[in-house]
Amino acid sequence: MRKEKSALGNISLKNRLILAFVLISIIPITIIIWFSYYNSSNIIRRNAEEMTRNNLNQTKVSLDVWVASYEDILFQIYTNDEIVEMIDTINRNDADLFVTRGQLRRTLRGLFYTKEHIKSITVITENGDVVFYDLLTGSTTKNTWLDELKLTQQDLYDMISEDNQTHVITTERAGVFANETYYLFHLGHRVIDYKNVNRRLGVVIISIDETMLKEICGDGNDSNELTFLVDNQGTVMSYPNKELLGEQIIEWTDVREQREAGYLEFVKEQNVLEGKHIFVSSVYDEKFGCDIVRISDRSEMISMLSRQQNIMLLIMCFSTLLLITIIMVLTYRLTDSLNKLVGLMKRAEKGELSVRVKMNQAMLPEVETIASQFNRMLDKVEISMNREKEAIEKQKNAEIEALEAQINPHFLYNTLDTINWMAIDKDEYEISNSITALATILRYGIDKSNSMVTVSRECDWLKQYVFLQQTRLKNQFECGIHVSPEVSHWKIHKLLLQPFVENAILHGFEGRTGTLCLEVTIIPEGDQLSIEIYDNGKGIPNEILDKMNRGEFPKSKEKNHIGMENAFSRISMYYPGEAKVWIESETGMFTKVHITIPKRVE
Image (cartoon, rainbow, N blue to C red; front, side, top):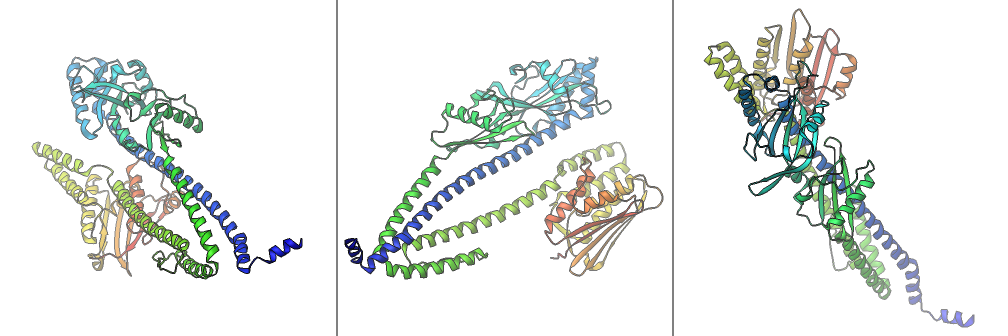
C-alpha cells in the first residue's frame, strides 16, 4: 500500500491534471461524439425516408393532375349530345350507317390533338360496332390495341358499362409501328344520354402512351433510384424496361409492407441496382388505382456516414493528443473560441442568419471545424429559405393561373368569332352584336388575366358584363355601379368582382319577382379600397353564410359555386393578410358582400 501511495505521490501535478482532464473531459466527450454520430445518422436516414415519401406524394399529385386532364377529354366525348346521337344511329343500324360512322370518326379525330400522348380514341357501341381513330396505324379498319388486349371485346364492354365510373385498363403491348414498340394504357367510360341516363349506348376508350407515365415517374437515368407504377392487380403499368409492362410481379395485398417486400424481391431479381443497401418506398394512388414505387440505393449515403465516422475518430484522436500536450493553453483558447461561437449560435437561433464566425489563427482546429460547419450550415439555411420563398411564389402564381384558367379563353373567343360570322351570314345582326360584345368581354379576360387595371376600366368591363346579363334575362333586374372619382385611377386585379356579381344574378335573383336591384359601390376608406356588392334577392341561409365567411363552400359542380370559392382564394393570394371579405345576408331580403383591399396606384 505504501509503495502504491508513493508511486501515486510521484505523479506530477501536470500529469494529474492531464489524467483528470482525460477522465473528466475526453471520455465523456468521446461518448457524446459517438452519440451525436449515431443520432445524426438516424436523423439523416429519417430525412432521406421523409424526402422519398414527399417525392412520392408529389409524383402522386402530378399523376392525378395529368390523368384528370385526360379524364376531361373523356368527359367531353361521352357527354357530347352529337356523339350520343351518332352512337344511337349506329345502334339502330339506320340506312345512313356508313355516313354516321364516318362522321363519328371525324369527330373523334377533331378531339385527338388536345393532348400529345393520346394514340387512339375508340367507341364500342351496344350492338358491338367499333368506331375509332388511331394515330399509329392511320387505318379505319385496324385498331392498334384492341386485338392485343387480354380481355375480349365483350368483357371490356361489360366492365366499363357496368357503372358510371372511369375505368383504368392497365398498360399492355399495342404493337410495333415504324420499328418502334408501343405500350398503351386506357381510360374508359360508358356513354351517357342525359335524357335517359340508364340507357346503354356504348363506351368510349382513350388510349394513352405509357411514356406519359414514364415522364411523371422520371427519366430513369439515376443509377441510384428507380420509380415505377404497379396497378392494384400487381401488374406493371410503367417501368424503364418496357418488356416487363403488363407483367404481374407480385400477388396484390392490402398490406403495404407486404407489397413493398414483393417489390424489393422483384428489383433484386432484376439486378437493376447493384448496391447492398437497397430500400423501397411506395404510396398508393386511390384515384388511379396503383402503387407508385420508388427503389433507392443508399449505399453511397451509408459509405459517407462511415467516412464521416472515420474522420470524427481521427479528429478525436488528434484532439486528444493535442489537449494532453498543451492543456493549459488550449483551455483558455478553447473557452474563448467556444464562447464566441456560442454567442453567434444564440444570435442565429433568434433569427439573425447573417452572422458568421470569423476565422483567425488563434482558433483551435476543432473549434475552427465546428465554426466552418456552422458557417456552411447557415449558408445552406439561407439558400434553402430563398429557394423555399421562390417555390412558394411559383406555387402561388401557378395556383392563381389554375384558378383563372378554368377553360381556354382563346378557344372560346375563336369559337364565338366563328358563330358571329355564321349569324351575319343569316342576317341575324342582333345576335351578332351580342356575340361581338361577349367576345370583347372575353378578349379583356384573355389579356393578362391576373394583371392589374384601374378601377374605372374594371367597372367599364363590369357594365358590359351586366348589360349582357340583362339582355339574357330580358331586363329582369336593375343595376347601378357607383364609383367614387377619388378611386377611379386606383389599381385592382382584373375580373375580381365578376364572380360576386354573377352569384347575385344567378342565385340571388333566382325565383324572385318584383323590382330586382343590384348595386355595386366602390369608395375609399383611408388607405383601403372598400367595395360593396348588394342585391335584394332571396339571401343566403345562415348555416351556409357562416361557412362561406369561414372560407368553407358547399361541395358542388356548379360553376358559380366554384367561382365564389375561387374569388375568395384569389383575393387571399393577391393580398395575403391585407384583404378582408365577408358577407351579410338575410333570407328573403338581401345579400351584401363587403370587400376591403389595400390601396394600389402606379
